[in-house]
Image (cartoon, rainbow, N blue to C red; front, side, top):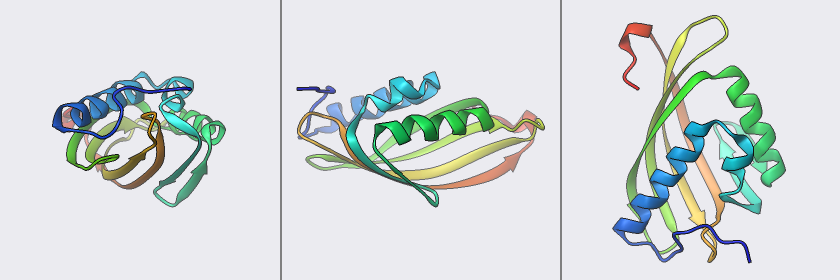
Length: 136
């Protein structure tokens, strides 16, 4: 059986580790690598888009990182329970025209018994920034 450590139930240390692993994977900008943290039938809501299954995760992330250039993400543990984690995050990127943005958001994650994320619900807002105002 496929597993992604650490496994639930989470404590502060393992929840923090799970968040850091997610941050590292997303900063790789490798859609295939990122998708392996999710169940085959994962359910996402990302802004107004609904994504179902690993294949759609790869398609979604491929499109995302073709538009969001020089992407850099920072995640922070907000709360956790047995098999759920809430995070806040911010990331910066620029578009093809060279305009910079900082995105702020929150995610709610639910994991199966093998440590794979089965649900991911993200609320995200983008803020235009000047290049000299970048923090990440």
